[in-house]
Length: 194
Image 1 (tube, helix red, strand yellow):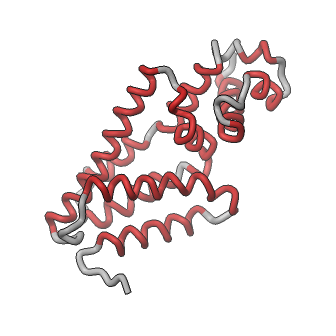
Image 2 (cartoon, rainbow, N blue to C red):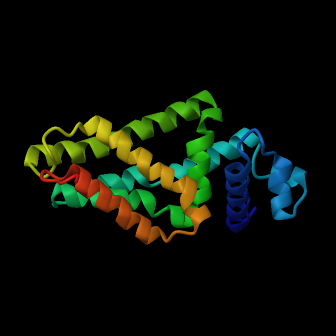
């Protein structure tokens, strides 16, 4: 098995899960997408569940590492927040199917996989919270900002981009600018909501 072919099979699984959902997808759909026999899929995955697990793992890869690298930088919290928002959104350019599958289908993962990804998700939320807390402490963000709630709201806003950006054909860099502008204005210590 070549690495290239395995990547093609995983990409196909991500596409089929993103389009049909876990229960609507089958190994036959994945095989048909690739123009291969269904039995050949089992050379790459033991089951549809195993394929979902790999797609979700790839879909979340790098998010925490990129965010941690950003919070370690010696820059103001507002800039860190914008950089994290951008780092969260950029993978949609080439991994949208993986992201959609993770967001919509992870509930069908085996228990241990769900727990592992849940720990990663909580760690990721904590990074957002830290940046927001640091911004409140430094006076960069408004004092009544709730870091936990704001972190979840921002992540939710970012995740929703994966649901519509591809369908609308909107330029990802433009979307990132809109999202970072909204977050910057909403968290700024002095902001005008008129």
